[in-house]
Structures are given as C-alpha cells and as structure tokens.
Image 1: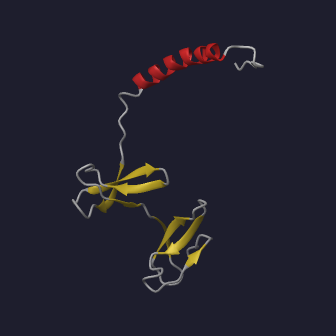
Image 2: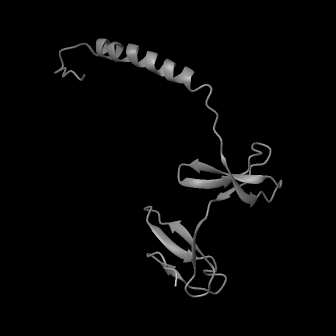
Image 3: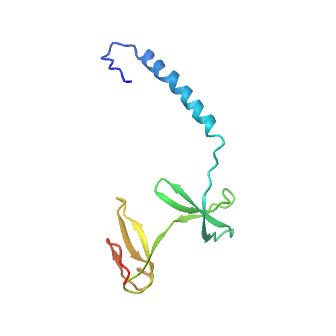
Length: 127
C-alpha cells in the first residue's frame, strides 16, 4: 500500500520501512533461484573456430549464436531467422531482419552479393 507523505515523515524512516521487507523477499528469491540452471537451445550451426555446435542465446538486442566453449572460444555471430517461403525473384531463402526501430523486413539471402535485389516490408506468399 502506498502512503502519501506530503513531506511530513523523515526520509530515513521511509527507507527503512521499505528496505526491511524488501531485503527479506530478495533473500528468499535468491535462495529459490540457486538451483535453476540455464539451458541453451543448440543450433545446427558449427563453430568455425572449435567445431562445437553453437547455441542460441539472448542478449540486449535479441537472439545471437555463441560458442558453448566460452571463455576458451569466444566466437559469436548474429542469429538469422528464415521463413519457409522461397524468394519470389531467385528462389533463395528469405531472411527476417529488423530495423533499428524493431520493424521486420524480408530480404533474400542473395541480396546484394548474389545478384538478387528482393527486399520487402510484407512477408512473401507461397505460390
């Protein structure tokens, strides 16, 4: 329950009233989470440096591939999502990418180095 203080209570009392119960909750949660172990999803992409199968991890900017041999092997690269619809222009795989503002767009894996220029805001449809 939130009390309106209107400047009449001492700030040290307000802090101690909050922190006492809060500290107990933090300790309880900390003990409960000690047995939790993070399991990463294994991808089908081998690490170029050590040969282990890379795992999918979540970072500040979304998913990425990382070598499970960290810290000996520090290889990491972006996770590229694809859809099951072939490129309407060349038949290659269509990748889902995000703009800086997190908006999805669709681009051919052969764009631009493979000669295909397909890129679209809308998901291509199977024909």
